[in-house]
Length: 194
Image 1: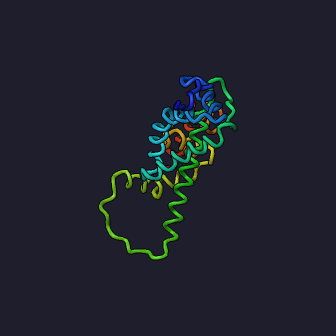
Image 2 (image 1 turned 180 degrees about the horizontal axis):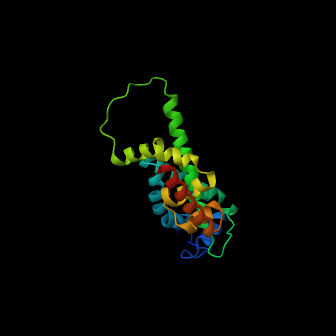
Image 3 (image 1 turned 90 degrees about the horizontal axis):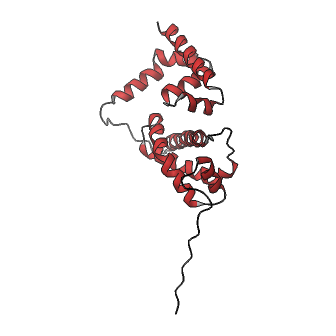
Protein backbone atom coordinates (compact mmCIF):
# COMPACT_ATOMS: atom_id res chain seq x y z
CA UNK A 1 0.00 0.00 0.00
CA UNK A 2 1.33 3.44 -0.92
CA UNK A 3 1.00 6.41 1.40
CA UNK A 4 0.41 9.85 -0.04
CA UNK A 5 0.79 13.33 1.28
CA UNK A 6 0.06 16.64 -0.28
CA UNK A 7 3.06 17.99 -2.17
CA UNK A 8 4.31 21.36 -1.00
CA UNK A 9 4.22 23.91 -3.74
CA UNK A 10 6.57 26.81 -4.00
CA UNK A 11 4.98 30.07 -2.85
CA UNK A 12 3.92 32.52 -5.55
CA UNK A 13 5.58 35.36 -3.62
CA UNK A 14 8.98 36.19 -2.16
CA UNK A 15 8.90 35.78 1.65
CA UNK A 16 11.60 38.46 1.84
CA UNK A 17 9.68 40.74 -0.51
CA UNK A 18 8.04 44.06 0.25
CA UNK A 19 4.95 44.37 2.40
CA UNK A 20 2.94 45.36 -0.67
CA UNK A 21 3.94 42.10 -2.40
CA UNK A 22 3.02 40.13 0.71
CA UNK A 23 -0.35 41.87 0.94
CA UNK A 24 -1.01 40.97 -2.70
CA UNK A 25 -0.19 37.34 -1.85
CA UNK A 26 -2.46 37.46 1.21
CA UNK A 27 -5.18 38.88 -1.03
CA UNK A 28 -4.87 35.80 -3.22
CA UNK A 29 -5.19 33.48 -0.23
CA UNK A 30 -1.58 32.77 0.81
CA UNK A 31 -1.72 32.10 4.56
CA UNK A 32 2.08 31.86 4.80
CA UNK A 33 2.33 35.44 3.52
CA UNK A 34 0.03 36.53 6.35
CA UNK A 35 2.33 34.76 8.82
CA UNK A 36 5.32 36.69 7.44
CA UNK A 37 3.40 39.98 7.73
CA UNK A 38 2.39 39.08 11.28
CA UNK A 39 6.01 38.39 12.28
CA UNK A 40 7.08 41.71 10.75
CA UNK A 41 4.36 43.96 12.09
CA UNK A 42 2.80 42.46 15.23
CA UNK A 43 5.68 43.40 17.60
CA UNK A 44 5.72 47.11 16.72
CA UNK A 45 1.93 47.26 16.53
CA UNK A 46 1.68 45.76 20.01
CA UNK A 47 4.27 48.21 21.37
CA UNK A 48 2.56 51.25 19.86
CA UNK A 49 -0.91 50.15 20.91
CA UNK A 50 0.35 49.79 24.47
CA UNK A 51 0.97 53.55 24.46
CA UNK A 52 -2.76 53.93 23.91
CA UNK A 53 -4.08 51.19 26.20
CA UNK A 54 -2.59 49.67 29.32
CA UNK A 55 -4.75 46.53 29.19
CA UNK A 56 -2.63 43.84 27.47
CA UNK A 57 -5.70 41.69 26.77
CA UNK A 58 -7.36 44.48 24.80
CA UNK A 59 -4.12 45.18 22.93
CA UNK A 60 -3.73 41.49 22.03
CA UNK A 61 -7.35 41.32 20.89
CA UNK A 62 -6.83 44.43 18.75
CA UNK A 63 -3.70 42.95 17.14
CA UNK A 64 -5.54 39.68 16.45
CA UNK A 65 -8.51 41.51 14.93
CA UNK A 66 -6.09 43.65 12.90
CA UNK A 67 -4.59 40.65 11.15
CA UNK A 68 -8.02 39.12 10.65
CA UNK A 69 -9.03 42.38 8.92
CA UNK A 70 -5.79 42.29 6.90
CA UNK A 71 -6.63 38.74 5.82
CA UNK A 72 -10.14 39.76 4.76
CA UNK A 73 -9.20 43.07 3.09
CA UNK A 74 -5.68 42.55 1.71
CA UNK A 75 -6.96 42.49 -1.85
CA UNK A 76 -8.25 46.05 -1.40
CA UNK A 77 -4.80 47.44 -0.50
CA UNK A 78 -3.35 49.66 -3.23
CA UNK A 79 0.07 51.20 -2.54
CA UNK A 80 0.24 54.94 -3.17
CA UNK A 81 4.02 55.34 -3.12
CA UNK A 82 7.09 53.48 -4.35
CA UNK A 83 7.84 51.92 -0.96
CA UNK A 84 4.17 51.05 -0.51
CA UNK A 85 2.53 52.26 2.64
CA UNK A 86 1.53 48.91 4.03
CA UNK A 87 2.77 49.74 7.52
CA UNK A 88 0.61 52.86 7.66
CA UNK A 89 -2.35 50.92 6.26
CA UNK A 90 -1.94 48.18 8.88
CA UNK A 91 -1.49 50.80 11.64
CA UNK A 92 -4.74 52.49 10.61
CA UNK A 93 -6.54 49.16 10.90
CA UNK A 94 -4.87 48.44 14.25
CA UNK A 95 -5.79 51.74 15.87
CA UNK A 96 -9.39 51.37 14.70
CA UNK A 97 -9.48 47.83 16.08
CA UNK A 98 -8.16 49.09 19.43
CA UNK A 99 -10.87 51.74 19.54
CA UNK A 100 -13.46 49.02 18.81
CA UNK A 101 -12.05 46.87 21.60
CA UNK A 102 -12.15 49.79 24.02
CA UNK A 103 -15.76 50.51 23.07
CA UNK A 104 -16.70 46.85 23.54
CA UNK A 105 -15.11 46.74 26.97
CA UNK A 106 -16.79 50.01 27.94
CA UNK A 107 -20.18 48.71 26.86
CA UNK A 108 -19.65 45.45 28.73
CA UNK A 109 -18.85 47.35 31.89
CA UNK A 110 -21.88 49.61 31.57
CA UNK A 111 -24.18 46.72 30.78
CA UNK A 112 -23.44 44.76 33.95
CA UNK A 113 -26.75 44.15 35.68
CA UNK A 114 -25.41 43.48 39.18
CA UNK A 115 -22.88 46.22 39.90
CA UNK A 116 -20.53 45.48 42.74
CA UNK A 117 -19.25 48.23 45.01
CA UNK A 118 -15.80 49.50 44.22
CA UNK A 119 -12.98 48.23 46.34
CA UNK A 120 -9.49 49.66 46.51
CA UNK A 121 -6.99 47.71 44.44
CA UNK A 122 -3.89 49.73 45.24
CA UNK A 123 -2.37 53.06 44.48
CA UNK A 124 -2.60 54.60 41.04
CA UNK A 125 0.60 54.29 39.04
CA UNK A 126 2.61 57.35 38.13
CA UNK A 127 1.58 56.85 34.49
CA UNK A 128 -2.12 56.80 35.44
CA UNK A 129 -1.73 60.01 37.45
CA UNK A 130 0.06 61.75 34.57
CA UNK A 131 -2.61 60.65 32.09
CA UNK A 132 -5.39 61.87 34.40
CA UNK A 133 -3.68 65.24 34.78
CA UNK A 134 -3.22 65.49 31.03
CA UNK A 135 -6.82 64.60 30.26
CA UNK A 136 -8.55 66.58 33.01
CA UNK A 137 -6.03 69.27 33.87
CA UNK A 138 -5.01 72.47 32.11
CA UNK A 139 -3.18 70.53 29.39
CA UNK A 140 -6.34 68.58 28.52
CA UNK A 141 -8.30 71.82 28.25
CA UNK A 142 -5.57 73.35 26.08
CA UNK A 143 -5.49 70.24 23.85
CA UNK A 144 -9.26 70.43 23.39
CA UNK A 145 -8.93 74.08 22.33
CA UNK A 146 -6.63 73.11 19.42
CA UNK A 147 -8.08 72.72 15.96
CA UNK A 148 -8.68 69.08 14.96
CA UNK A 149 -5.83 69.18 12.40
CA UNK A 150 -3.30 70.41 14.96
CA UNK A 151 -4.53 67.98 17.61
CA UNK A 152 -4.31 64.98 15.22
CA UNK A 153 -0.77 65.88 14.16
CA UNK A 154 0.32 66.31 17.78
CA UNK A 155 -1.38 63.08 18.82
CA UNK A 156 0.18 61.07 15.99
CA UNK A 157 3.73 62.30 16.58
CA UNK A 158 3.86 62.83 20.34
CA UNK A 159 1.28 60.53 21.92
CA UNK A 160 1.40 57.70 19.37
CA UNK A 161 5.15 58.00 18.89
CA UNK A 162 4.98 57.90 15.10
CA UNK A 163 7.70 59.38 12.96
CA UNK A 164 6.82 62.42 10.88
CA UNK A 165 6.80 60.23 7.78
CA UNK A 166 4.42 57.69 9.31
CA UNK A 167 2.16 60.44 10.64
CA UNK A 168 2.09 62.06 7.20
CA UNK A 169 1.03 58.79 5.59
CA UNK A 170 -1.71 58.17 8.13
CA UNK A 171 -3.00 61.75 8.07
CA UNK A 172 -2.73 61.93 4.28
CA UNK A 173 -0.70 65.15 4.22
CA UNK A 174 2.90 65.98 3.25
CA UNK A 175 5.65 65.57 5.87
CA UNK A 176 6.27 69.32 5.93
CA UNK A 177 2.63 69.91 6.80
CA UNK A 178 2.88 67.54 9.77
CA UNK A 179 5.99 69.35 11.01
CA UNK A 180 4.29 72.72 10.66
CA UNK A 181 1.15 71.56 12.43
CA UNK A 182 3.14 70.09 15.32
CA UNK A 183 5.16 73.30 15.63
CA UNK A 184 1.97 75.42 15.59
CA UNK A 185 0.26 73.11 18.10
CA UNK A 186 3.21 73.34 20.49
CA UNK A 187 3.24 77.12 20.18
CA UNK A 188 -0.50 77.36 20.90
CA UNK A 189 -0.17 75.01 23.87
CA UNK A 190 2.75 77.04 25.22
CA UNK A 191 0.73 80.23 24.81
CA UNK A 192 -2.32 78.77 26.60
CA UNK A 193 -0.35 77.18 29.44
CA UNK A 194 1.85 80.15 30.36
